[in-house]
Image 1: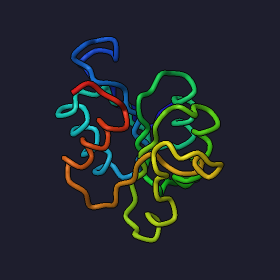
Image 2: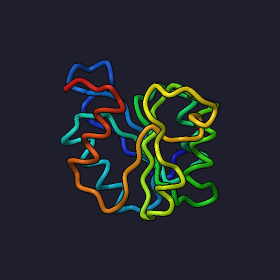
Image 3: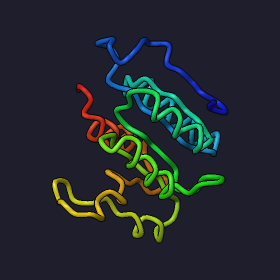
Length: 149
């Protein structure tokens, strides 16, 4: 089970006021709260948060998600390991990785849209380097989740 799941009070993804569902995997409580508030309050996404990558995999496999937002530096499993596991479980769900490291950003640079290739599965659909602004997070989430404006 998620170690700290936060559900939106605004209804489900079937609710026209909700843009989509986002699973946040982040072990830093402040970063998780920031992302949750931005995506829920400003972005109108239904948000579920867990700090545990193993719980994230269970959640990803058991429900519909429009986006997974994950930190790269997680306990037990790295963000890139989580990404690989998510690609096996839910290959069509976009993954947005967050990193505080420029070297980490280079290692997992997103693949160009529409570019075929075996390496594409190991690449995120988007990448944000900390620190980033709320507008950057919101823009990336809307673009990747295909949410309604």
